[in-house]
Length: 349
Image (cartoon, rainbow, N blue to C red; front, side, top):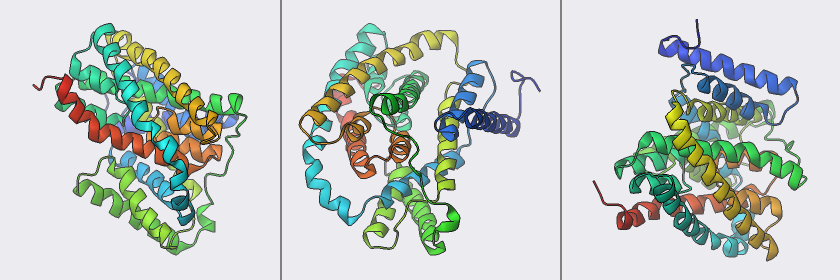
């Protein structure tokens, strides 16, 4: 079957799975970093740009994110709660960080790149890809452009961040991601499964933003604080989450046209350079005042997706609690304040 030939949904997903598995094998054999993340990402991205009819895995991909939610929740311990006052100063910089991004990004996308105001506003917001596409579409923006711009942001940040960590900060991306399933108590793994399902579906029921990650995180955090869970999900589960995240980023470029590449993707690339400069500036401030080590500060202010930054924090051996608290505040601030602020500058349609 030609990569460009029409295919059924099942064939598209089998092709996607085969290419992703091939990507893992190539990265593994070449001893490249994070093979279960970058292998599927690279293979599916390349195939999508070549015109392959790839297809994501829907609810399976969403379910994979619940594993990372459980991993984050398990890191919320009484010791971490005791450290929250020490994070207050750096966390207070997050609203300023988001405001500066908006002040720079909205004019960039509207006046320089020529997007309408609704698309420009939500293209500039450093929130989750799905949330920004949904909010932007409701405000009258272009969902395809928003999807490509945010996918490009996540792709570049996830691709470059490991190099910055290893080459610029001498970090090793070899930290154990978790214990093998065989080494974890069965009752704790059962509690993790319950926390993932209850948090995910319960979060969706009450309209929680980012329910697939935040819901399991909240439920697992409660179990962790009660002393019922003492470890992250098994390594196999976190590798599966990496695998599905890699595929998800790559298939976001399926069906891209040359016109979309020249306008949407290149605009996303240019804006990532702006974000990188802003993130570097805030990271330097945090490190200069001794609020965090360079590794934690960099990961806390990196403008990537919450799931992707969680993976990098785990493999880099960073303080997961510190990194996640800052990303949660950023996402919460964007999700709650962006739609309100958008009404002041975007004429509702």
